[in-house]
Length: 339
Image 1 (spheres, one colour):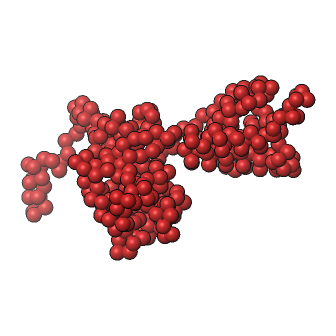
Image 2 (tube, rainbow, N blue to C red; image 1 turned 90 degrees about the horizontal axis):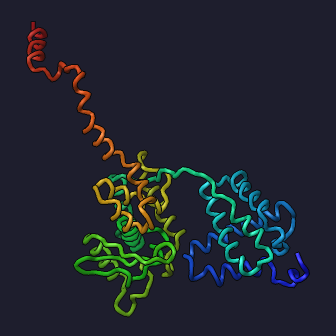
Image 3 (tube, one colour; image 1 turned 120 degrees about the horizontal axis):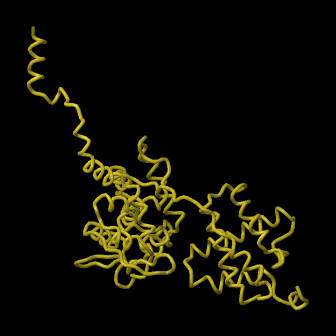
């Protein structure tokens, strides 16, 4: 590049600006953390290949060939799925779009990176609990203790409202609205607000929980769920609590491991099994389109099998009569057995 390029701020300067000034406020905290983690891995890959420190990384190093090798390294050496590799690539794409106006002399390199196609991957069948398993999990906490009572209310809220773990941990006491139609105000992906209506049973649980927490009118901005130190619980804490109660169930039929997102899947499958319309499930989950929600319809075998059975009556024309359904034949066989 020209001599003026050497006078420009470094790659790490622009990266810090991208993460702290551009991404924060526009994107969810989890997305920003994911972007930061992507570049942490990128610098690790750079140091592993060159022995140089991240501070020595230059825009000349950030090109299509380097990014392709980095993505392949994630797949082969880190054993990332194609879907996760795509997420890392999206972070690099966001940075390139941000930098197109900051360092136009590298526009060709940025465009080449942006042209890298996403990897084809098939959506995984989500892990979920059936009705009996869900009941076992929600009744697992010991509600005679403050921690167990909190865990029970938290897991019930996570399940019934079908929340992402980031949405759950961000809730304040004031986000729960009581009344004829109780609901929870949620800030979802991309900072999009949505309103999730809840049952009267969950409303009663949350109302009693807030009283026991001491959340009066002057304390409504307090975190809804807090850890043992009184601070807002984080995603790691939710995962730990879920794992603890899953292990306590000790059933062979219960999944060995279940993420908080698994309760979201479980709720979606329960709604589908009860014939809730896909559009309503989409709104509850906060999906931007029904395309994502349709996966629950594809893996719901009950309605599909019912339709198959209903449409298979034509096969009865060649069906042989079963002797067990013939009353006269059964009576005759009984007389033979007596003789």
